[in-house]
Length: 202
Image (cartoon, rainbow, N blue to C red; front, side, top):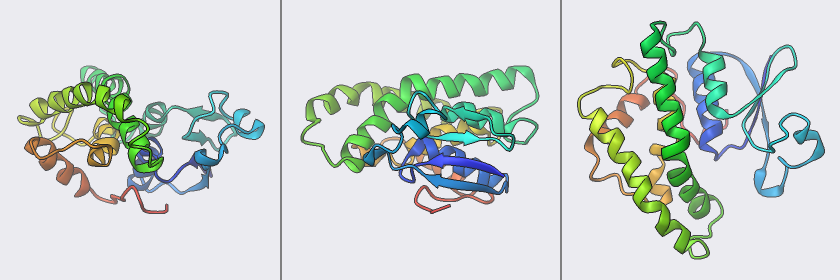
């Protein structure tokens, strides 16, 4: 059975949990409390020397880190990853966008405010993340104004990757009121079969 080393509030871990649920793949979830340093122990570092979650342990004992790499691995040969080469590349384009232009601003802000509870301590850094965070949301809004989903108007791991932190962006101080296309897209994602919320303990 697959094992997922995961921290429940983490959006990066949620990506893997959501895809596993929607693929109906059984797995064992092992909670790693990053707030208590559990991802920095020698045992965990032997699985991922970078000391970050999530980590997927395959059936044959191999370890795979980085949330979008895990999405890529799990989605091969499924409806969540297209077969046509250009569509596959567009999925990857959005995965790279998520990690470079979206996650560093929206996810980090949420972590400081809602998980660490240190909004005042990080106030200046949070201000610096506002403009690039809203710029990423604007890119999504423009695209989703004319598309049901991010790639080929079908639900893929690109949507899962960007949904994870976008749907909780307000927990990082980002107001989604002026992004109606994103809000409609969030509802479409939540309506997908076997959807689970980020707070579901599975």
